[in-house]
Image (tube, rainbow, N blue to C red; front, side, top):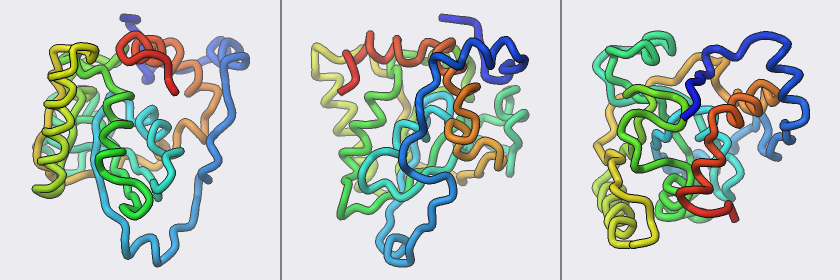
Length: 215
């Protein structure tokens, strides 16, 4: 793995290297208005798959996803900052809270997106981001979500073509703390820096190695 962290993305050198690699943002707007009808029927899912910038990017284009929010979960410190979490000691993981319309997309479908965007065999972090703050996990909010999450993991464990062993945690959701504003929609607001970070981190290459080419 590349010894690289998003905390070190500075300098014009990075900007110049990223120009050719950067793709356009998805159609979902940065400040998309959510209708009252969407809010009434919305459900919530919480996933940790390493860098939360990348997890937002994975879920935002999914039809039926209303919005995503980066934050922290699973720790023992109230309202932690990003710096506290990545320094270690708070017990939190970077995670994304996904609000979705269950009439358009199922929780099972979101689980499929999650697995395709995580290295479930890595207990020490995800891709180039190391440490417990970057561990993978599914944080369920109901008994039904717990059952479905465990069933999806068991199905992968029974599949000889799937990565193994799977060490991704499935635990009850605790308090979710939103990350600082500059992290929200980072991949859209800072596409050049984000594109370089993602490429240098080797995320896409590792995911293809694990799961095959993206559909």
